[in-house]
Image 1 (tube, rainbow, N blue to C red):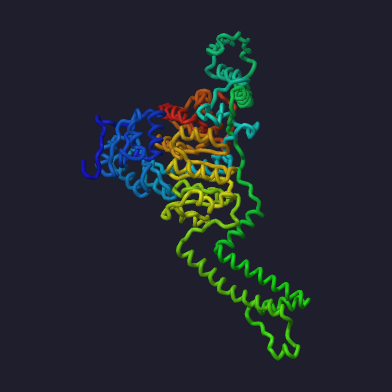
Image 2 (cartoon, helix red, strand yellow):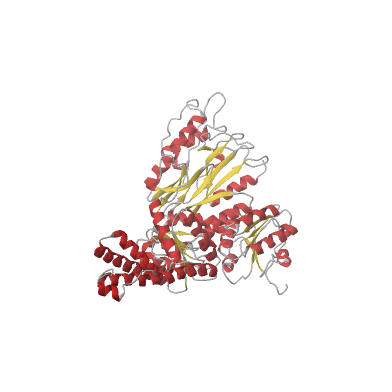
Length: 639
């Protein structure tokens, strides 16, 4: 090895494997996805095998080798056998380094599938055109909607066919739900959650009949029926008379299932302890309702804060109060409003003519002692306004040139505090800003890349490395609605959340946590709180892209993830000839919509469960991580 790096190349020659470059949290989750759910050989290329998540990655069962190189050189690519690899995932380093590595790998293996992590999505779209078989994804863009939605106390959504899919819980579930996606939800023990539960209750019999009387159902020639084998759970129960084969057409029974499925699942979930969650589709994306009056008030207050500092506003308010009091004195003494306005404006401009001693002696002066005092006060305040106005202009122009971030104003109310302006924090702040929600950011590193991005949106930033208590106070925690802690360190995020809850017991807290056990204790301890993991949300999408599949989005059920994907049936695909029963399985996959070939319309809850898929058909599925991995195996099979 050269001095550029050293490592442990695969002991034996390896081929048809996948290479993951990175030792961060996303690389850790991605390797887990590949070895546990897709069951493929993985070689990991890390910069330092003793830091970050590299030691944990090396201990994972199924990892063929962990190779250490500080940079991606030709020697490093040879060490991971890039020439015989099926795919390469670049999930660490900056955009420029990942682009260079992707092009180098493609030069050595023209057919390799390349997935690279890029923060700049626009640049990523252009890079995809340079790759023969590649995709550019943003982990922060994939995960940010879940954090933003959690801060607002509602689930994030995924756009599919002009509708927006989202997860609803318990009382929020409506009758037009697509399917039940989880039950046994218990905040005190989130490990009890059961994703994609098996359909039970009233709908179970309909599902069984629809499956049995399908194209391959147990129906003999001439109409004689073959008794269906009973499930083990039914063995001890008395058999019920079967319906005649002609009692209902398969499509009709399938339609009944479509109507009864969610109801049966709800009944089963009610029998179990805990809540339930369902997948629902809305015609428009739910937005945060903020009245125009509040937005106008916030805008006026923020505009005033932008042009003035706190001290300047104090000086202006005192001067204005003095002018109003002096104006009232003049009006009271003269009883002439027009003359009072006229003389006040002259005094403010410094153009008023004072009484001469001769006029006073002759009794021709303009007023008594109190009137003269009032005019002096107005004149002095007018002299104050001129330099203050000049200072406002100078400060606004100078701060704009210096690029200094703004601090939150006194008019900031019902806002969300985003702690940490890394890739994820910047995305979360931008999305909340697009929804019209006031945002205040906190960052300890004055060189963080996200400061310039949020400043361009007019979002105030609190800078400093002092105690969180002081930083949160400056961010106006008392008047905030939520705190989102998304720095790269679990302990820092938890500290920020606990300090926020201490300063404002009613505030909602959303914390980025990698460790599942940590998150479990978090849910069991705090109410009105949520935990999300960027790597947990993004890794399934990266794994699917590495397999050549595109995931439309991910939805969160507490710490669990559901993938929403649209699949097209192509010639040679393993989907040809399969029906809805073949694709769906408890705990894994649900078909929620279908588009028949040559039909422009997407049919939600497609009723015909026995129709065979053909070339050109499209289906939309909701799947767990393992369910989507099994589905990918079907897709990879030759028809």
